[in-house]
Length: 316
Image (cartoon, rainbow, N blue to C red; front, side, top):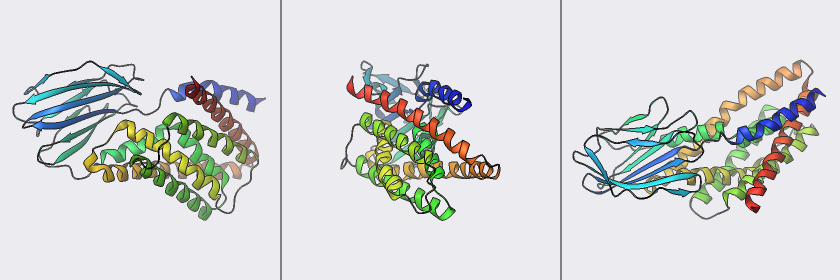
């Protein structure tokens, strides 16, 4: 009875979980003439606040078009004319929150570029005088995307529940990592394409399958390659969908992809010790059978909810 009550409680919380996914804002500035920049500003529609930009006093904004809705983002386009340039000046982003950061990219006429990240705690970004060689902001976004993506977290935790032994765990997570890295790269380069709504529905289906495997308490002593590698390919398409919506500078596509992927891996590594410690304590207390059953029901319930919801989005 207690397990059923907990399951129902989690199901009611599913919609809350879905409405708190990471959707960073995006500011892209391209220098078209000396000290004149084309502005592309993308702000997520799921925010309860209104996003805004505060450019340096030396900049004048003009030719601002009508706001458009593109996917999950409201898009503004305009130009700014900065008398003394942007280097050494500050840009402030309004409307940020714990789940909404802003990625800032600037491409200059001389071929140099800058990648920065504005957060709710540091909404003002100082544009450096020197070129930014590495798009490290994508690393932070990768970590945040993994840790805020409840479906990806549940799948990784499910993998840890399934395997037995440290070596098997390392091989399983490595297989999952390799697989989603492959499809992430192929998708970003346009070699593999699947609508994000379809990939999200399939990801939900993988979670349901994972729940059934955990319910049987198989405890794989050998690496479950089909689950880890096969399903990792699917999750890579989900990561690619998030990255394509965020956007990236074409000049830094390889480095942006690398840092985003490294961020995802860092997020996974942050999860593993806590889950392993929890399972060790559960087994010590001889509660593993109950916990595995409870987690399976929760995982299956949430996965089924997401699957139905995402299929309805595709159909209608």
